[in-house]
Length: 215
Image (cartoon, rainbow, N blue to C red; front, side, top):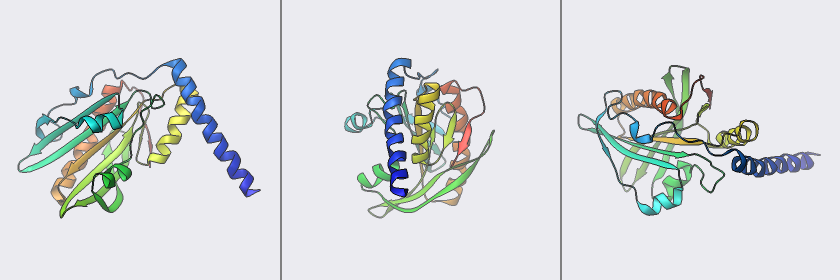
């Protein structure tokens, strides 16, 4: 009985995944109302914004509709911002989890966890990782955001993608990642940056109603 239940559950998810692909082809992609480049050059006290070139191999691997890699500064501290937007995730490109990408780039995840960010819609849980590579350490904050949702967990994000694609014809979404030095002051400032960035991303997505918030 249990085996049969898992079989039908798995079959249902696979069927839904195929269904969202067909629906996306019929209903089209979600275009941004404004480009990612309109994210302000000053956010939560971080300024000196400088757009960074991305490795062409990484761009090819990500297959995102739109990408932004930018560095901000505050005093002697630097903050790295990366945003990848996918207008239609069933069209060949999918959001890549840092759980996979970071180890593949030589980074070791030492302290996986979450942190809560104050936002206009209440507290939002996002991922918080300490990572290391060749003696260097960094703090990573990241989350998944669409026109309707802000979610920390990538597996829950995929289920929402299937749901929203099937019922609303919306298959777009983004991953936002912030990299900071391992410092209590920098982390607190990075969390404030994340709060304001969420608002800016909703503006770019053309979102109107308050988002659904998930872990």
